[in-house]
Length: 122
Image (cartoon, rainbow, N blue to C red):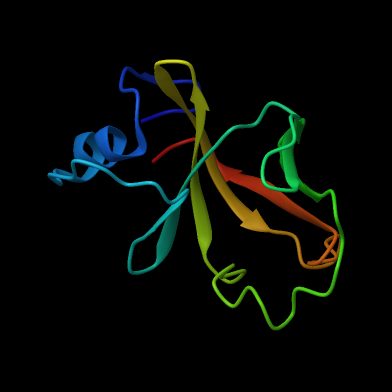
């Protein structure tokens, strides 16, 4: 699979079923953990959702916290150390964006996170 490839499914569950041969009827989380990576299914449209907004700047995905606060004890599930296989959500389909790695130097976890593209293929 290459960046820009469209997957004609409507829901996270359908995407996981297509990619992994699963049989989910529903899957509401935006992440799905593999042993060494994480599938990330998000809107990348610069619109606020649950106090965060996601947008792209070239080969970087930015997660911006719209209500910054100390998240150090709240979000142990971010998994900065694993690459993310990113699929952007659209109305009725997903687009494979690429594989991204957390930029620890630029990010301030409770306020803004930067994910840098490391591969165009999955």
